Amino acid sequence: MSPNTTPDQKKIVVLGGSYAGISTTHYVLKHVVPSLPEKVSYQVILASASSQAICRPACPRALISNDMFPQAKLFVDIQKQFETYPIESFRFISGTATELDNTNRTVSIALRTGGVEKIDFHALVVATGASTPSPLLGLNTDEEDLRKRWAAFREALPNAKSIVIAGGGPAGIETAGELGEYLNGKAGWTRSKLDSPKVAITVVTASKILPALRPSIAQQAETYLAKVGVTIIKNTRIMTVEPHGAGTAAELVTTKTTLTLENGKTLEADLYIPATGMTPNTSFLDKELLTADGRIDTNTSTLRAEKAGPRIYAVGDASSYARPAVHNILAAIPVLGANIKRDLLLASRKEESAVGEDRVFKEDTREMQLVPIGKSKGVGAAMGWQLPSWMVWLIKGRDYWLWTTGGLWSGKQWAKES
Image (cartoon, rainbow, N blue to C red; front, side, top):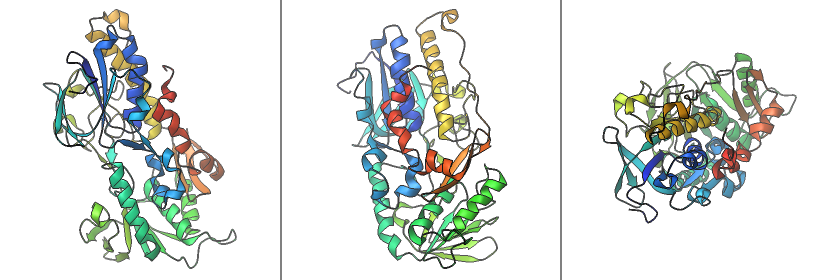
């Protein structure tokens, strides 16, 4: 047992140390626990496979060089973000959830230092996020592994003559734009494309690029990509990858790859980066608790995982409550916090008339996506309005949201109950 844990404390466990998990933990510590009767009888436990959090949207640029971002802001120590709370009210565990027994209300954590800890929980929030197909584009394991993969990629990059990126979503397009500008430079303003790029960079997508945005915005993105030497192959799937595991297996990140398309054409790549969506980190959950796409089945209004039992919730990319996007996470945290508070007050035998109604989350389904292309261009829309390139740069492209994460990681963003 941890030295800052007592046997009779009711455990509120949050699984996942990224946007959703860290935000939920701060919100519960600031606004939920203080409002509970006998608040000292509760402890919030945050468990994360990585001991550090990262601004994951920055990976398409950060993978090129450590010089792209100040590393102390790109990576932050999770435990340090919670030092202001009473030691008995918070505990951080560096480990990976391996099993949820929702009947007996226990969760097992494989500790990074070795061994497994089983925790009896009073409330549980699943915020484990999702893994990217390429280990270059997210914290699929921990910060040490990510840095190691980046180091290998950077060593191989100067000798690469051909790069293939699978996937026409934001991650694939942003990665192509960053690599194109870094390796090839940009065509002059009078030219529509870079005629003789130093490195052939190809994006292969099963449909069109940036399907969440209107066609005219996607077309503008293609124009910007052509200026940095990127070619788009649309409406084509990659059928086989040789050797198997190239681009996805950590040890095969820099392996030369042969890709066969569904039309029989083959592409040779010195570097292959798959960016075709993400896989929810929910393998530790019973399949009966999941939707068809692997996310935890979540009430889209209240964020409760009702099939799992009372006081179990899900938020972020591992949850089915909304389209995976940071803005949806940030909008959901106050709703989740309010409903956790309500449920805990009821569990402490408060009358239902005294705790009010559920708070309801409603997803903003308007066109909303910002996609930087290189260090000075970008396309996107916000709240249904198309944004000019300079505004996409100002909001996201200059540092891929790094300007927003300080307050979020530290909890300052959640200082007021909202």
